Length: 547
Image (cartoon, rainbow, N blue to C red; front, side, top):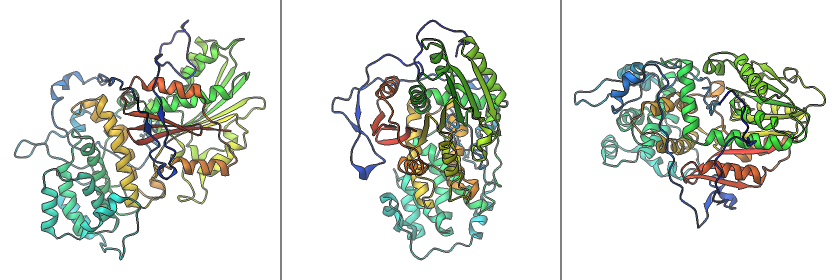
């Protein structure tokens, strides 16, 4: 982002190419709320947009000769159960966490045939892992709980296969990796150590961080299963011996992910558009951003407000964030404040930045410095699913926070969240949902970055793997990735006293124009003023506004 003002017109939602988009229709079948896409018959195929990613790390040049090696999951794949600050977690979940050297990040070991050897960041001794698994009090539960997933049901009977039958099925050419992963998750759920001992070693032969999308995702899913078993309850993740990249490299990985896929741009632009419409004509604006991360979301709105007829309004931004994001930034919230103050000064926008360096669940009204006469806008972009609800603590900070915000009488509340049901689902169902959701994410990344590209491997390991392993390995307060589908968010918001504020046709058109720069497999759907962004037939991100 340039640090000098420009005379060209600034779009209130960010800069996008001026193109005429194609419309995708929302399916009105309420029984399929997770698949709101129906492509129009005249869908225009847009040429695929590819990105060339260059490493920002100082030693990237010296390692270019290793680009075409096969990589396997190693000790840098995931760590801890804390949130990783990626644009998703902004993240950007990330979610809902520096660079290690590439020598640490990628295994160079090979077996006798010269093939890479997969290693785990959970246990360094396979014999130790086997012993841990056998030491579990492994008794099958009487009757499997009914899980509304046809794929899980179809493989449920496979847990009783004899050893030779298991080995035969797993060695068959073109074996179904997805079914085996879910079968293993069910075995883990029921402490079936016999099936686990058979499946984990076989699954590790089938996954690779440089393979097909499902093979890459499978590497992290298997790692999560092993972490769950090795830790055995409250000590989950204590066995992990993983490294984080340096903050500067982590920031570059997050930037690559932001550019490679439209998910975070979609969230920022739709929220910015809703806020711009809600505060139109206001002289004093107070934006409260839960999990402000780098603060880059607010540069375009400041530029747009500077061009307002009659002069720009006074703008105050309260940025809320915790120490996890501070690591990714390389410093505290004062860095964000200085950056935004500099941008506002360039465009002559009266500006004030207030830092609240705590987690969202700790926020009280006194932290927000509400001033009478200011038009309040509250932003939750990929953050509220990190706030624990009633299933984690009787304090139920998720609903408490919504009630607190409603008491501020905001002009608008913007909510951007992943469309996934992982909060209260039983483990096997949560595992299957995570597998389905992130398969779509990994497939979309596949279009932007080559499979043997180190940057793609780093992006997936440091920006996505931690979310995945947290979903699989952790429970209770340690599981911070707790997504809900839009229907549940809607119920929570309405119980807190909010009512929908449909996103306008202008916001819709702006997002459609953005997507023209990406693959036609990205689908945009609108239903009742709510925007869904998905990959093919799988909705992934939902944006809505409330008052």
